[in-house]
Length: 114
Length: 112
Image (cartoon, rainbow over all chains, first blue to last red; front, side):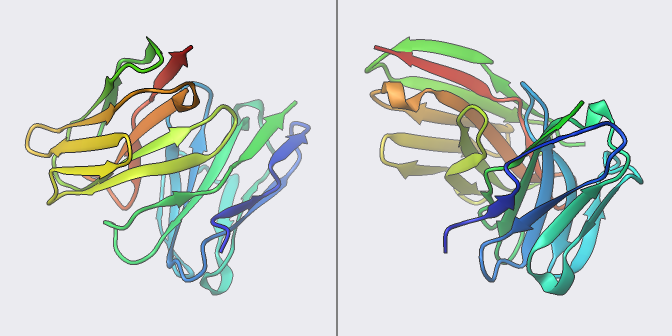
């Protein structure tokens, strides 16, 4: 197992376009998280899945954002009608078991909206 | 709402020096605390995980302590090397939902 994998690593898009990111967690990790990180800041929580169920969403996750985790495996994060303020690093993390388990992060997807 | 603060925001030290990074959090009802390393433009690498029932964890030249009641953690790096240059992030799980709450990090530069 090579760890948490994210694709693409970089994405440049024009304002108003839709983008989709993919995250493949570590095999058998039941918990999956999405975070967003802007320059000079720590990552901020966006949403959390336990298996295929989306159990928690941040207020940061506006109605332009949607996340899925079909069959409890990989996850996708879609941003519709992108805005310049969406430019950030989008990080995916996974863990196994309970909330006290260690979280492992992917390399992130750097989104630039022009 | 859980809030995490890291001090200092930036630190520059000569190679070989021992150093301490500080992390504080406002809500002591946490499950665990993790220290991460982040290189520029990269993802996060987990360094140490301390469960709420533990006082410290060690990995190589790194030692992290946790004082849950006072809401504090420290990361001790012994005999620093230029390869240790990175941003170090502290995060707590709990005290506000199923998520990690991060500090803004300490940017460390170890000079030759």
